[in-house]
Image 1 (tube, chains in turn red, blue):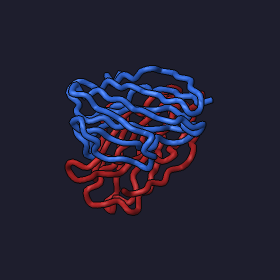
Image 2 (cartoon, chains in turn blue, purple):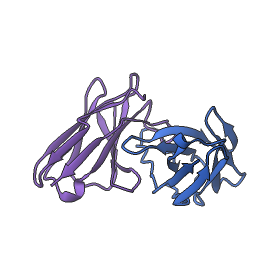
Image 3 (spheres, one colour):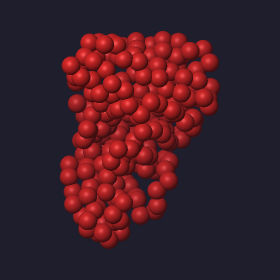
Amino acid sequence: LAKTTQPISMDSYEGQEVNITCSHNNIATNDYITWYQQFPSQGPRFIIQGYKTKVTNEVASLFIPADRKSSTLSLPRVSLSDTAVYYCLVGDLPTGTASKLTFGTGTRLQVTL
Amino acid sequence: ETGVTQSPTHLIKTRGQQVTLRCSSQSGHNTVSWYQQALGQGPQFIFQYYREEENGRGNFPPRFSGLQFPNYSSELNVNALELDDSALYLCASSLAPQGNEKLFFGSGTQLSVL
């Protein structure tokens, strides 16, 4: 499974756009890129997933360049409630094989007023 | 809310004891994965169950074992508890075992081993 590298922490003010970049140089052809958000004492929560180019949903956008060796999670106009740890994961395995998705240490986003 | 429930929410055990953690998966999901999350770290994959069979295992010793039942709920058993087993144990259910499937996590069981 491809390993990922993310910044350990980021700070932002409320109302700003936040971009978190993840490097995954060894991403395989079949690998998808998935981002999760985790609040203290809770399980991670799915945010967004993509394979290439750009994906947007109601909470975030995911930008993936053509070589797919990195991806950027974009959170528009963050609020205090977006303070959390964000994980970038890559991986896909053949049918019937466990999804041993590897969580790194994530990026700790702190949003302040 | 993900529809995945875990019990108990907190547990205190002493070294050498055994513990059983339980997970009820989201309706329609046949796959359950268990993760261990130490303080300040990302979740580490323990194993996965798919249709009542173990479908893959991470780098954890055999004293970590599990079960999945016909209703796709699951148990994680840990024998001979060690101090380093203190962690948040997370259960995640999904529609299928593939890596691109969305994982739905419960809120976890916080285990403290004294």
